[in-house]
Image (cartoon, rainbow, N blue to C red):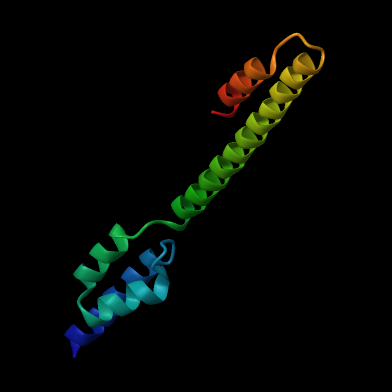
Length: 108
């Protein structure tokens, strides 16, 4: 009887430790209860902490925003460069062949 009570008590402790992790209290408690408190503790220790997941999500979101800004900046630059060479062609400074060559370089 004492063994069962200790098993449940230590499973409860592992659940408390797991409450700050992605596995949560219930996950840590149930794994410990089903397998053993030692194995449950190992599972809880291996699982990521909630703070790490939040930081990772913020980092990922920042990377996406930066990438989108770079894409929009690049497309703005491409548009601006195409306008420049179109004006040069319109004014007769460059030929149609030179325009096509410059356009293909810009769009690469």
